[in-house]
Every structure is written in structure tokens, then in C-alpha cells.
Length: 296
Image (cartoon, rainbow, N blue to C red):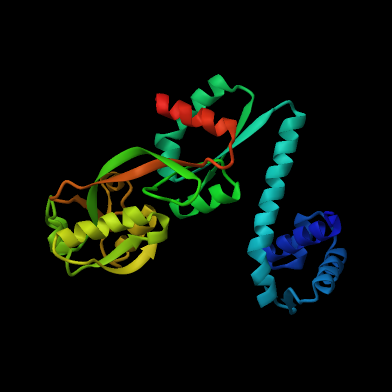
């Protein structure tokens, strides 16, 4: 049975944790401060752990409070999604499709898909959230999203299916003042002694391995000093002088003024956007969306 009292207390904890100030939290919750303080104390007694360290000047999370915060945030997000779905059902909506997408996919892929889905399924509610590629597979497994549009490639685990949608030629991002930045095309071998900013391998092992393989074919193993979860982060690191990065050529459009993107002399291509879904879930709306993508 659901402990609704605990649910309320966890919601109050989340607001205080976000504000780190009981007065502001109480104002946000439309309640006075003393009852809020009392409810947090009841929660601490129930959990048998102290969640906040309070002084006249500040309110800080304890180690225990910080440890449970991510789980409470996720729980609150799920409750908000549930509330939204219930409201939509009451209003006459019969179903909802939740899409997670990297920012480039939101611009390049989703608009046409949403138009098609609305034409064939006018009663469907489409919920979208921006994600990093690293989040796609875990969110599909947890059921937090139904479809992901991200930079994914290769075998992604049990039940996860993918279709490549966009491909781009590989380029190298360099700090603006780098000696190679003056070249129009850069042979990969010239990067042998550079520090590299790379995607986390677990985001897409085949993508990571293909870049490493390309470097080895050029006669060297890349010295990876930074690993990040998005191409935008790669560009940001390069702009701060933290190394070079192999990125899709399209990133030239969004590179910061402290960074330049030059094509490689070799003709190497990478998948920039793929659609992924968890076939174990068996959502008919997902099947309809995939069919619409295949027809485009």
C-alpha cells in the first residue's frame, strides 16, 4: 500500500533541498515555516536519519540528504508524469508517447515525425524531453521515455533496437590558436601527439571504438584525457584549450569563437542521429512512430 504521508513528506524535502532555505521553501509551498520545519522533522524521525544541517546563516544537506535527493527527484518526476497522464485521460486523451532527444534531433528529425503522428493519431499526446546520448538507453530500459533520438550505434543491450537516421563526415575540433587550425584539411596522423576529448565509451561502444580504430589505422592510439557525454561538451572542452576532438562536420555551425572545426583529409563518416526503442515494452504508438520514420 502506498504511504501517502511519506510521499508528501518527500515532496516537502525536495522543495527544501532545492531552495536550501526553509523560508523560501515555505513560500513556494504556500505554507508557513513552522509547519514545514515540523514535517521535515517528522520525516527525519521516520527515516531515522538527519537530512539537513541548519544554522542561522544557512541550510545544508547532510550526506544522507544528498544521497537520497536523486531518487526523490526521479520519484517526483514520475509523479508529475502520472498526474499529467491522468489529466489527459480525464480530458479525453487516450494515449501518450514520450520522446527523448538530443538537441540536434529536436531540430532536424522531430518536427516532421510529430506532424505525421498527429495526422494519423490525432488523440495522442506527445511529451518531449531533451536528453544527452548517454541517457538514452537507461531511460528506455526504465520506461521513462518510449523512443530516443540520439547519437547511438551498434549493439546497445537486450531489447533495444535502433535505426540510423543521419550520417555526417568526421572533422576535428581544435582550439582557435592551434597550429593546425590554419589548414583547410587535416590528416588524422597529424593528431598523433594531441590530447583527445572523447565521448564516454559506454554511450556507444561501437562509435567510440570506430574512432579509436581510425586513429590506429593512421598509426597511433589516441591519448584520451577527457571523456564527456555530448558533442556540445566536446566542443566546449576544446574551446577551453583542453585538447582536440573528432566531431561531425555539422558542429562547425555551433562551434564557439575559441574553437574551429576542420574536415579530416580522410573520408570518414559517423552516425549523428539514430532512433532507438525498447521492443520489450510493446507500445503500439512506438510501432506507429517507427513505421512513420521508415516511410519518410
